Image 1: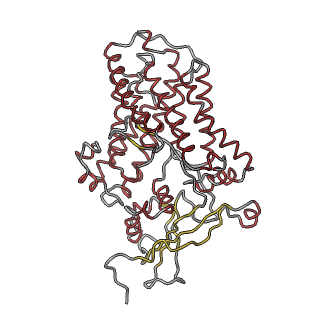
Image 2: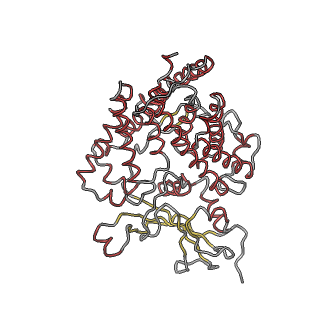
Image 3: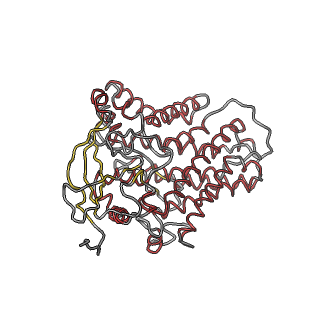
Length: 473
């Protein structure tokens, strides 16, 4: 069975598995801390309503068996516990079959969450975590050397992530071909980080170099993943450096981190491989069967990449086994933000005491510097960015958000940085206004201390109160 395994990658496998378990832990922690306001029984998009109208075959999930806040919390915290056990190396202390089942648990739990998550879980890195996590099930533990075919599938996944992202850029916004997208991207990206202001103010020639380097890394370097060592290691290392650059420049949840994790199995790390017995026949049969099935499913993302109408971040099966990826096929030139305000006045007027709600990650107060949150995912903050692009993105949930704010709903307020109203005195009216935001320059920053300058654009939502509420005499 020497042809089946690659013992020289045992350390790469160990690092990959522990790092992937860390990403799983962040994902489950995000779910556990945010689900009540987003998907709970009184959430903005209750999962119970979704389960009622969407059959199991279209969205396989354990929540078709039981759907309650308590059960969801139990699944999310169980995912945290299993992820922590995998970080500690529990899979290396149990038999091979048990290790495979142990890795199957977080995948099954998370695919159940994603499949009822609706808009809140419609991000490409959800499917990327699931596809990566499914391959991890078959990577083995200390009882067997890493299977060559699974290592190949991990490189194939990394290739599709990078190459698909490169193609969507070249086929999309002309600024990628003109090397000018980074003149805008750091300012208009969904959630800027603490260094994004400085990245934006880098010299424009350097922005051109950044874009050109990105094209090389995404369109040429991925092919080197399938070459002999040390070239494959050099290619994966370059991808890791590029992803770390992106980590510094913005908050992209765990997208950059899971991509870094994917690059690790392509690294031939210097270490002496321990002696391991031959892989058992049942394991060889299972791995080869699954690999053949996944390669068959891969024809759909391949056809998508070859198509002139390429789409990004789409799953082709309800289990998210093989998906297509991509990001920022178009780049906004202007940043808009929806600012939500409330007042205690019975009759709302323009000169009423309107108080602004503060979000954790999205820009609000021009003087408040962006924070670093990634790899933690602030789902509401991200969707507020989409809401500013077009009200159609906010249609399913924005009205429910306003209603919860009018009620001073505790779970919803926990998603925010600060509410301007005390818990026992909810606002009488809520309104939303659209502002244009731009980064200040160096002179403005020194004079005002503000990293943003904002200008009122238009009304987004007129003053609104709870239905049936009456004005006080």
